[in-house]
Every structure is written in structure tokens, then in C-alpha cells.
Length: 397
Image (cartoon, rainbow, N blue to C red; front, side):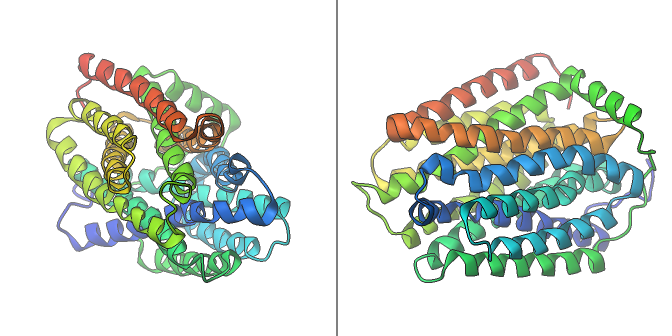
């Protein structure tokens, strides 16, 4: 094994892990901090809950398609520079979104935010899989995904707390400033790649690389799992605010914001399941995390705010554990064009957020919370069947 790989316990390991942790934090805070604003969008722009969810869905969609380009770009031109440029562009378009005068312009600016973020999201896990020792990759990616969890928590919670007192445009402006700070940290602290191998950017190679990954059974099933699991998780978060604002709960946005503490469970599970996977293998553990998610969504059917919080906690614990396992699994399985493999997984992941997150709004409109639970449960049952098949197939990762 190459001794130049970064190993757990070294200064470089924590420098890289914490910088990427910040990147994960920034991504989720910016994407999902907008969710508590959705009821206000419905009021201010006279739109439905499903239409309001487009503020998240368009960003997730452009992010997903951007991944198909920025991943290969990083294979050709390197990792760090593209991540820094991506954060700078994200900061600019986030500030633009804070001053847009109408719903259409807000959606356009959010689409550009998602496209810009793709330059960070596509490359973060690839950078880790190249620079971190394979024996410590699970925990490194777990830390990165813990940043996702903390960003999602802080984005939703802080926005939920202040949305009754500070206009949503001001909040978006502050988010833009935070992304600008993250760009400076990436430029200053993140080491240059030592194991990056230049791959010329040719459309023919790009096409064949994607076809190779999509037709590799071990990878294609993991791509599908990303689509299903992220879709279920985002559907929960998109419509739980509407549910808790309505009778019999009638909770305030500030109280609902406290429910975002469930992301702390994701911070814990992503690192712990990452460690467990390094020891036992992903295939032996993944089905457990999906079962935990299914239990969590069913608990939310109990009509008590504490039980709803508990159900969200359990589902979040399972989701970030599953995301950590799948992410590190793909890093191990992809033997060529790693940037493309990560991009394809995250493309499916964010398309799940976009397509299924908006489709869940139809379930909410037609059948209220019971419809949302049935929708998410169906996604998780399919996911569990896939995970059990992977386990039975004895894929030794």
C-alpha cells in the first residue's frame, strides 16, 4: 500500500476531514435550510405546498445534472481548484436569490445555486477516496456526511427559529456570506491532491465511463438505493412542517425548528456505521440502516408531537448511516473514473430528492400525513429488498 495515503490519527487526516466536513455542512445548510421557508413561499406567492417545494427541487435537479459534468471535469483538471470555484459561484447566486423580486426569479437563482454546488458535491467523496488510506475511508466519509447532517440541522433549525422575526430574504443573504467563508477555508486548508491521476476530458471516454458504471451490477443497485432513500428522507422533511403547523398540533415555526435536532442522530450514525463497515463490510450492515428508517416513519403515525419527533430521530439515524455506507462502498468498488462513479451516485441521490420530494407533495395534498407515510414506506420496502439481495449475494465489501 502506498505510504503517502493519509491515515487516521495524523494531522493531515483531521485537516482534510474537517475541511470536507465544512463542505458537507455548507451543502446541506444551503439546500435544506430553505424548507422552513416553504409555508411562507406558499403565502407570499400564493402557491401550493407542492409548488413551494420547487424551491428545493429545482436546486436539487440542477445539482444532479451538474454532477455529470463537474465530476469528469475534476478527473481532467483536478479536485481542489474546482471545489473552491464552485463555492465562490454558490455564494454569488445565493446572494442573488436573496434579492429576487418574484417566484420565477427565485426559482432561477436557486437552480443556479444547485448547479454551482455540484462542483463541490461531485468531488468531495472522490477526493477522500483518493487521498485517505482505504483502511480509514469509511470513517473519513462518515465525518464528511456528519457535516451534511449538522448542516441540515443548523439550516432548518436556525431558519425555523428566526423566520418569524427576520425576512427570508435576509436569511438567504446571510447564507451566501457563510458559503463565501467556506470557500476561503477550502482554499487555505485543503491540501493539494497527491493521488490524482489526470484523465483527458473526451466525450467518448465520458460516455463509456458512465455506461461502464451503470452496467456494473454492484454499482447500479447502489445508485438506485441513493435515489430511493434520499427521496424518502426529503419527502419527510418537506411536508412535516405543514403537518405540524396544522391542527391538532398548531406548533410555531420556532418549535418545529427544534425538531431539526434529529440531525444529531445522523452525525452519530454516519461515523459509527462507517467504522462498523470498515470492520464488517457494507453488505452486512446496510439492510439494518434501512430497517431503522422504516421503523422511524411508521412511528410518526402516532399522533403525538413527541412520538413524531422520535420517529424523525429514528429515520434520520438510519438514513445517514445508510448514506455513509453506500458512499464508502462506491469509493471502494469504482476502480476507474472514480469521479464519474461518485457523480452518478450523487446524481441519483439528488434526483431522488427532486422527483420524489415533489411527488410526495401529491401524497400530502390527497391523503395528508397518512399518504406521506405510505409513500415513504413504499420506497423503503423496495430499498430493503435490494439491500437484502446484496447481502445474500455475498458481495464482500
